[in-house]
Image (cartoon, chains in turn purple, orange):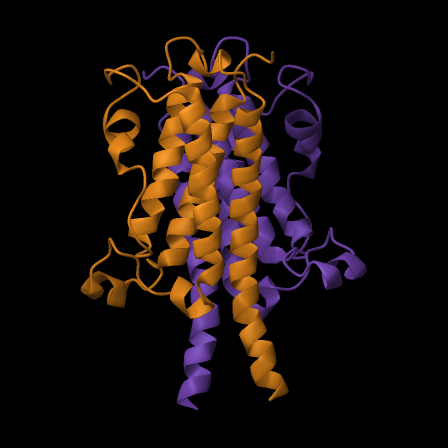
Length: 168
Length: 168
């Protein structure tokens, strides 16, 4: 009985550790954009590269797309994927306003937080929606947790770029 | 019996998933530098920012420092920390050669791969060397695995910056 309890909490601890890493990088990225004025959102990270607003929208749609990828429901911002994922910066005819994006960022990540908290360790290890049953049998590391870890480092990837912007 | 086997492999699967994420970001970063000529190592990522060689040395010493942080032995490149960690780029009097750094990168990551493979899931969940026993009791997510996840996203952070370099 004691052994079983300790094994269960071990599983949960793996999940908690991964969620903590997600929260740290999400929170660093959120803080960066919260401190960036609406005007500076339209500055390029470095000359000739993506503007901050593009990275913001890009990270938003990538987070939002985790919901269907994890098999947890329907995305809320699929209509923004063309602008912030398929197309490069400046290719879309128009963008949502910064106010709209800030609200969507908050909403999407709050939704993810709720959904993540509901998953059991076993559910985190289940295959994600974009891997076939056959591939998953051979590569059981292609699970929901791998999506979480990948998106965590994806925050790091773009935060590293954002930190190159001149300090205001 | 069957249940116990399945629980054990669950623990191992968490570790495998995290190690896979580490390998993916390490391999992307290694590939970037392998494809960068010795000459281009001395270019700045973007004007006025760190040179590629500084990021290379920085990531090397951060990886190498994981060995004592994880309580797995003594670092091999602690003598490079001043140049690539404490000091900013261009502050050190002299740098190792690119050839030396490329060899050290290979050696350090091969060493980590061996050490990581020897850790059991339980050992991954043990506290790391820089957390006190008291803090660890209250925050059991400050374990070895959290160091691995943090350093994985740290690769992402700098790789995102490196990808801003003009393509050769």
